[in-house]
Length: 284
Length: 185
Image (cartoon, rainbow over all chains, first blue to last red; front, side, top):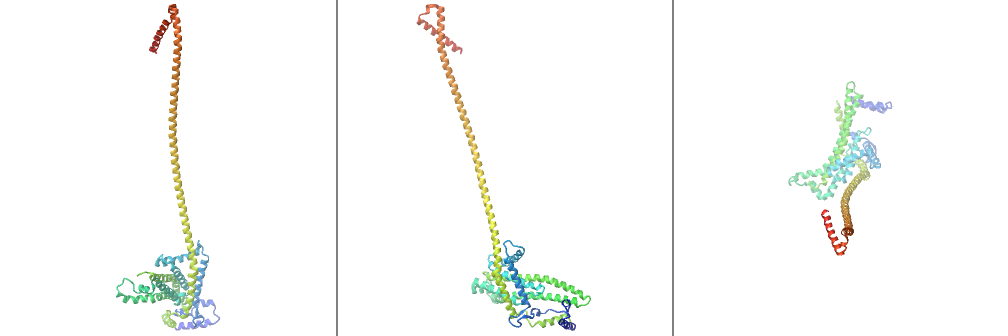
């Protein structure tokens, strides 16, 4: 502990001095920095302490959003009836959401009004998730709960709206809180649970699942790479070699994070489609 | 002291922020960013891409329909052609049959006519022969009578000059002669 502290102090002193150049800084270690939850609450870049506080993660989100819009804008502007390679790839992604999620869950005939909603959700989540493994961005836009909450709220409003529009307020409450085909005493147990489900747990779990996955992924990567940095540049002798292990771990987890980014987008969108379908169903 | 302790310590340092409770600025910026994405995608980009997809689907559908129509037309044309061919064949067969029948009729007719002609010719010839024979007989009768009379008168002299007797004798002789010729013929 004392060692670590000393190293930290030393690094700070060195960092403030002009003598240290970029590569010395890049290939040095001032002790092992375990990642904290503070990772997700970086210093403000602008307007600190106000409602408009703009930090690194918000910047990452803006970059991801701009990239998303630019990519699709270019494809849409150049879209041809006979698609090029890139257009085919984008269309494959759109088809995936339409066929594998919307039509699979809601049914081919009823899915069409919700395809745009689900597609937007899926693409946005993929782009915000994938920033977690893109160099220099290095944090998922969805790893702070604000954005997942906004997306979950959109789903929430959407499925409540669809349910009420389809069944009327009373009808929707009846079908979702008092599912048919159950002996009435069971309602004493079931109705509060269903109430919690429909009005609180669904949006909350949607947002939390996504955020928790992204936080965990980021922490894993930080641990692996912080460990590698520490072991390579500070540890002595044979322990240095352990850095190769942590580096390999970091490499593997980077690939894994790409997978998780796609998987979580799929899960989020899939569950949204399921909730929509439940709101649309006649009787359970 | 271990890394674990520093981990816990570090975690405690940063724990003034709860990752489950959003900061107001987080919500605000997330809202702004996401609303932009949602509007741009659901109002502009996805409809535009969908339009292209629909156009393609329509084009393919149209192509399939056109091909189907062309195929149906070809099938109809083939059927019509086959029907025409069959009809033409039947007609040819009928014409051939008619021609054969007609030829047979013509043949029979000409055969009949030829037969009739032949009969007529034969008939005419016979009649002519008959007439000539008749004429000859008459001529001969007159001449032979004269000759015979002359001969007889020369042989028996003037005794037979009496006309009545002379005629009777000649007729008897000729009848005799004729019956002899008939018996011989």
